[in-house]
Image (cartoon, rainbow, N blue to C red; front, top):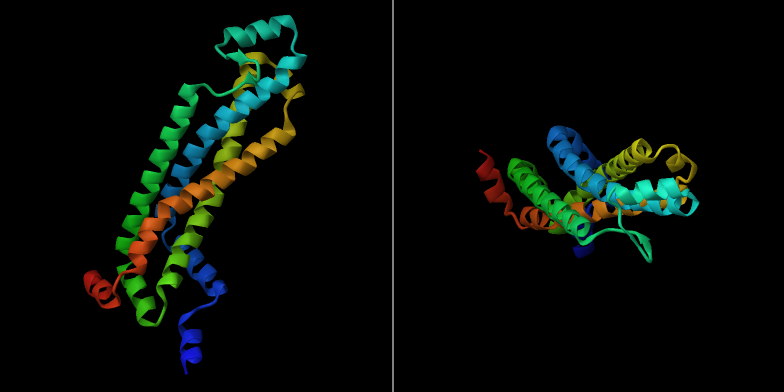
Length: 218
Protein backbone atom coordinates (compact mmCIF):
# COMPACT_ATOMS: atom_id res chain seq x y z
CA UNK A 1 0.00 0.00 0.00
CA UNK A 2 2.82 2.37 0.87
CA UNK A 3 4.48 1.82 -2.52
CA UNK A 4 1.19 2.52 -4.27
CA UNK A 5 0.72 5.84 -2.48
CA UNK A 6 4.28 6.95 -3.26
CA UNK A 7 3.72 6.31 -6.94
CA UNK A 8 0.67 8.54 -6.85
CA UNK A 9 2.35 11.56 -5.25
CA UNK A 10 5.83 11.38 -6.81
CA UNK A 11 5.15 12.59 -10.32
CA UNK A 12 7.63 11.84 -13.13
CA UNK A 13 10.04 14.42 -14.51
CA UNK A 14 8.17 14.74 -17.78
CA UNK A 15 5.17 16.08 -15.86
CA UNK A 16 7.40 18.55 -14.03
CA UNK A 17 8.86 19.72 -17.35
CA UNK A 18 5.39 20.15 -18.86
CA UNK A 19 3.99 22.06 -15.87
CA UNK A 20 6.99 24.36 -15.54
CA UNK A 21 7.00 25.14 -19.27
CA UNK A 22 3.27 25.93 -19.20
CA UNK A 23 3.81 28.15 -16.15
CA UNK A 24 6.38 30.19 -18.05
CA UNK A 25 4.02 30.59 -21.00
CA UNK A 26 1.18 31.63 -18.69
CA UNK A 27 3.38 34.24 -17.02
CA UNK A 28 5.32 35.24 -20.10
CA UNK A 29 5.90 38.91 -19.28
CA UNK A 30 7.07 38.25 -15.71
CA UNK A 31 9.38 35.53 -17.00
CA UNK A 32 10.59 37.93 -19.67
CA UNK A 33 11.57 40.50 -17.03
CA UNK A 34 13.59 37.88 -15.13
CA UNK A 35 15.21 36.72 -18.36
CA UNK A 36 16.12 40.29 -19.36
CA UNK A 37 17.71 40.83 -15.94
CA UNK A 38 19.93 37.81 -16.58
CA UNK A 39 20.60 38.91 -20.15
CA UNK A 40 21.89 42.34 -19.13
CA UNK A 41 24.07 41.02 -16.31
CA UNK A 42 25.61 38.29 -18.44
CA UNK A 43 26.03 40.65 -21.40
CA UNK A 44 28.14 42.99 -19.27
CA UNK A 45 30.35 40.16 -18.00
CA UNK A 46 30.70 38.62 -21.48
CA UNK A 47 31.48 42.03 -22.99
CA UNK A 48 34.32 42.62 -20.53
CA UNK A 49 35.95 39.22 -20.85
CA UNK A 50 35.53 38.86 -24.61
CA UNK A 51 37.05 42.33 -25.14
CA UNK A 52 40.22 41.25 -23.38
CA UNK A 53 40.30 37.95 -25.28
CA UNK A 54 40.14 39.83 -28.58
CA UNK A 55 42.82 42.29 -27.52
CA UNK A 56 45.11 39.43 -26.55
CA UNK A 57 44.52 37.88 -29.98
CA UNK A 58 45.19 41.15 -31.80
CA UNK A 59 48.28 42.29 -29.92
CA UNK A 60 50.90 39.77 -31.15
CA UNK A 61 50.03 40.48 -34.80
CA UNK A 62 49.54 44.24 -34.49
CA UNK A 63 52.03 46.71 -35.93
CA UNK A 64 53.59 49.45 -33.81
CA UNK A 65 50.97 52.07 -34.68
CA UNK A 66 48.09 49.76 -33.74
CA UNK A 67 49.78 48.77 -30.49
CA UNK A 68 50.23 52.44 -29.64
CA UNK A 69 46.57 53.06 -30.44
CA UNK A 70 45.47 50.20 -28.18
CA UNK A 71 47.70 51.42 -25.37
CA UNK A 72 46.42 54.99 -25.74
CA UNK A 73 42.82 53.76 -25.55
CA UNK A 74 43.20 52.98 -21.86
CA UNK A 75 43.79 49.22 -22.00
CA UNK A 76 46.56 48.14 -19.64
CA UNK A 77 49.00 45.45 -20.78
CA UNK A 78 50.58 43.27 -18.11
CA UNK A 79 53.03 40.38 -18.30
CA UNK A 80 50.07 38.03 -18.76
CA UNK A 81 48.46 40.18 -21.41
CA UNK A 82 45.27 42.19 -21.21
CA UNK A 83 42.98 41.32 -18.34
CA UNK A 84 40.33 42.60 -15.98
CA UNK A 85 41.22 45.40 -13.61
CA UNK A 86 39.95 45.42 -10.01
CA UNK A 87 37.35 47.95 -11.15
CA UNK A 88 36.06 45.58 -13.83
CA UNK A 89 35.88 42.73 -11.33
CA UNK A 90 33.93 44.79 -8.80
CA UNK A 91 31.53 46.03 -11.47
CA UNK A 92 30.95 42.43 -12.60
CA UNK A 93 30.32 41.30 -9.01
CA UNK A 94 27.92 44.20 -8.46
CA UNK A 95 25.97 43.41 -11.62
CA UNK A 96 25.72 39.75 -10.58
CA UNK A 97 24.47 40.67 -7.09
CA UNK A 98 21.86 43.05 -8.50
CA UNK A 99 20.77 40.31 -10.90
CA UNK A 100 20.35 37.74 -8.11
CA UNK A 101 18.37 40.17 -5.93
CA UNK A 102 16.11 40.97 -8.88
CA UNK A 103 15.49 37.27 -9.53
CA UNK A 104 14.65 36.59 -5.88
CA UNK A 105 12.21 39.50 -5.83
CA UNK A 106 10.54 38.40 -9.09
CA UNK A 107 10.25 34.79 -7.95
CA UNK A 108 8.79 35.76 -4.56
CA UNK A 109 6.16 37.79 -6.38
CA UNK A 110 5.51 34.77 -8.61
CA UNK A 111 4.93 32.64 -5.51
CA UNK A 112 2.38 35.17 -4.27
CA UNK A 113 0.55 35.06 -7.60
CA UNK A 114 0.50 31.25 -7.62
CA UNK A 115 -1.06 30.56 -4.23
CA UNK A 116 -4.03 28.72 -5.71
CA UNK A 117 -1.94 26.75 -8.20
CA UNK A 118 0.49 25.60 -5.52
CA UNK A 119 -2.29 24.81 -3.09
CA UNK A 120 -4.17 22.82 -5.71
CA UNK A 121 -1.28 20.59 -6.73
CA UNK A 122 -0.40 19.98 -3.09
CA UNK A 123 -4.02 19.05 -2.34
CA UNK A 124 -3.78 16.55 -5.20
CA UNK A 125 -0.86 14.90 -3.40
CA UNK A 126 2.25 16.60 -4.81
CA UNK A 127 5.26 16.44 -2.51
CA UNK A 128 7.35 19.46 -1.52
CA UNK A 129 10.11 18.19 -3.82
CA UNK A 130 7.72 18.32 -6.78
CA UNK A 131 6.99 22.01 -6.15
CA UNK A 132 10.70 22.75 -5.79
CA UNK A 133 11.45 20.97 -9.07
CA UNK A 134 8.89 23.10 -10.90
CA UNK A 135 10.58 26.31 -9.78
CA UNK A 136 14.07 24.96 -10.45
CA UNK A 137 13.18 23.92 -13.99
CA UNK A 138 11.64 27.31 -14.68
CA UNK A 139 14.89 28.86 -13.45
CA UNK A 140 16.89 26.63 -15.81
CA UNK A 141 14.73 27.67 -18.77
CA UNK A 142 15.15 31.35 -17.96
CA UNK A 143 18.84 30.95 -17.22
CA UNK A 144 19.56 29.25 -20.53
CA UNK A 145 17.61 31.79 -22.54
CA UNK A 146 19.05 34.77 -20.67
CA UNK A 147 22.56 33.31 -20.69
CA UNK A 148 22.75 32.51 -24.37
CA UNK A 149 21.15 35.79 -25.47
CA UNK A 150 23.22 37.84 -23.00
CA UNK A 151 26.56 36.21 -23.85
CA UNK A 152 25.97 36.51 -27.59
CA UNK A 153 24.95 40.15 -27.12
CA UNK A 154 28.05 40.86 -25.03
CA UNK A 155 30.40 39.26 -27.56
CA UNK A 156 28.70 41.06 -30.44
CA UNK A 157 28.87 44.48 -28.77
CA UNK A 158 32.51 43.90 -27.78
CA UNK A 159 33.39 42.95 -31.36
CA UNK A 160 31.65 45.97 -32.85
CA UNK A 161 33.18 48.28 -30.26
CA UNK A 162 36.74 47.11 -30.94
CA UNK A 163 36.08 47.06 -34.68
CA UNK A 164 35.08 50.72 -34.47
CA UNK A 165 38.21 51.59 -32.48
CA UNK A 166 40.88 49.45 -34.14
CA UNK A 167 39.56 48.53 -37.57
CA UNK A 168 39.51 45.21 -39.41
CA UNK A 169 42.46 43.82 -37.45
CA UNK A 170 39.79 42.70 -34.97
CA UNK A 171 38.11 40.57 -37.64
CA UNK A 172 41.35 39.06 -38.87
CA UNK A 173 42.42 37.98 -35.38
CA UNK A 174 38.95 37.20 -33.99
CA UNK A 175 39.44 34.29 -31.52
CA UNK A 176 36.60 31.97 -32.46
CA UNK A 177 37.29 29.29 -29.87
CA UNK A 178 37.65 31.78 -27.03
CA UNK A 179 34.37 33.40 -28.02
CA UNK A 180 32.59 30.06 -27.99
CA UNK A 181 34.11 29.39 -24.59
CA UNK A 182 32.92 32.76 -23.32
CA UNK A 183 29.39 32.10 -24.56
CA UNK A 184 29.45 28.68 -22.93
CA UNK A 185 30.64 29.68 -19.47
CA UNK A 186 28.56 32.88 -19.48
CA UNK A 187 25.45 30.81 -20.23
CA UNK A 188 26.41 28.47 -17.41
CA UNK A 189 26.84 31.48 -15.12
CA UNK A 190 23.33 32.66 -16.00
CA UNK A 191 21.83 29.26 -15.16
CA UNK A 192 23.75 29.24 -11.86
CA UNK A 193 22.55 32.75 -10.96
CA UNK A 194 18.99 31.83 -11.88
CA UNK A 195 19.12 28.75 -9.66
CA UNK A 196 20.65 30.70 -6.77
CA UNK A 197 17.92 33.32 -7.06
CA UNK A 198 15.08 30.80 -7.10
CA UNK A 199 16.14 28.53 -4.22
CA UNK A 200 14.57 30.59 -1.42
CA UNK A 201 11.28 31.32 -3.26
CA UNK A 202 11.04 27.62 -4.20
CA UNK A 203 11.43 26.57 -0.57
CA UNK A 204 8.80 29.11 0.47
CA UNK A 205 6.40 27.70 -2.10
CA UNK A 206 7.15 24.09 -1.14
CA UNK A 207 6.51 24.67 2.58
CA UNK A 208 3.18 26.37 1.93
CA UNK A 209 0.21 24.65 3.55
CA UNK A 210 -2.45 23.78 0.92
CA UNK A 211 -5.40 25.05 2.96
CA UNK A 212 -3.65 28.34 3.73
CA UNK A 213 -2.67 28.80 0.09
CA UNK A 214 -6.19 28.26 -1.19
CA UNK A 215 -7.71 30.55 1.43
CA UNK A 216 -5.19 33.33 0.75
CA UNK A 217 -6.14 33.44 -2.92
CA UNK A 218 -9.82 33.91 -2.30
